[in-house]
Amino acid sequence: MTRALLIGREPGNALGYSYVTEAPYDVVVIGSLTTGQLLRFREEAVLSALAEGRSVYLYTPGLPEAPKNRALAGSIAAAQRELKSWGVIFTDGARRHLVTAEEARELCRKGQLPGPGAVLTPLAKEIMEGRE
Image (cartoon, rainbow, N blue to C red; front, side, top):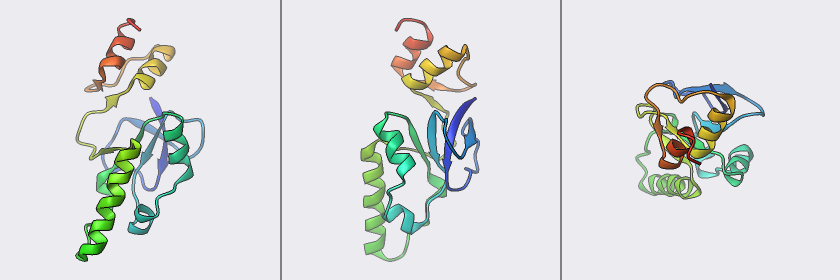
C-alpha cells in the first residue's frame, strides 16, 4: 500500500493509503485544516512535497465550514484557489484513487498493481503496461 504523510486528522473515508507521520512517504494527505491554518497555509512538508513533484491530496470534508462573514468566506475561497494552483488535488474521498505516473513507477518497482477501482492517468497506464 502507498505510504502517505498525514497532515491533520485522518480522513473519514478510506483513500487507499497507509498513513505515516514522518519520512519515508510517497504522497501527502491533508486530512483536516482549521480556518487559520488554511488562511496562513505554509506547511513545510506539503511545500517540500510539491517542490519535489509528489502528489498532495486535500480531503475536502476536513476543511472548515463556510463562514457567514462574506469577506472571510472570500479569503477562504482565495486560499483554496491558491492551493489548487500549486497542484494540491482536492478530494472528497468518494472518487476513486487517481494513480499518477510517479505512483505507477513505484508500483512497478515493487511489483504491485493499483488498488481496486483505481483510475490511472494516461501516462500511468502506459507505465503499468510497460510502454514507458
